[in-house]
Length: 304
Image (cartoon, rainbow, N blue to C red; front, side):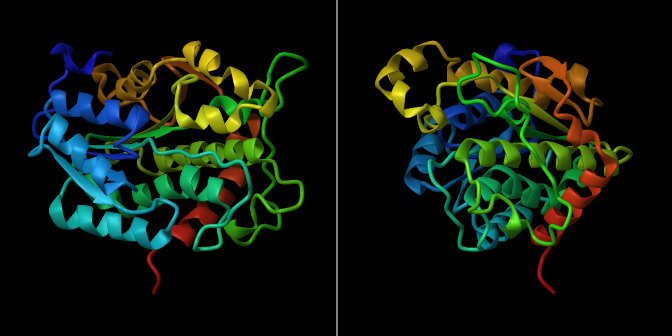
């Protein structure tokens, strides 16, 4: 759906876009502003955020600067947003990251898990009251089809869905451990958890007028592609990027879920671009859903 085609009027609506100053996020922010929304973005780079604010509408964009991998910053983002706005109509958890090595955040959480799952989960969890107040409202989680196939070069053999076994796990810091660590798999597992917990949010809020859906936007030409490209193929990065979707094309998939009037009551779904698909079978297991939710909520909840 083309948000600025005149078919969607978001005047009076407030949106929050994580990673809103770069790549797909930059496009999403600009399109929402063009459609009339007031957009709050999160970014690690304050100067980049301010440049975007001046470019697309200084009075229509707010910038929250901080690190999505840090729990304290997530709580600060939610608190600052809540002080400024009593309603949240659109939450687009767009930010994502892939790392070539294993690293821990300041909170001791593996970084893929922190940025690709816990950041979006925590903001969604903490801003529930603002989403509820704005109902009908929507949450869109940008995920990845890598959860259905963790082969970095999916040319030979069968798809290899990412594994997720939460039996015996008592704290999310235990996930993506040193033993057997593979960056691409860690990334996929985090996106799977985001999808699973999105289903739980959708079930819990079904009667509140808050919808929660997930979307894989396609293979988009972003910096993540450089990180996941096998070493043997890195000399051909420019060619690879030329074959991928533009950030504009990728953003369109998320914007469709966020703004299409025909999807206003659709919830608890997973899309690959504009087509509804099934996520990995483990994501439909009730015990896995319950455990993933509890572990994530324990981490996200305010202390005390």
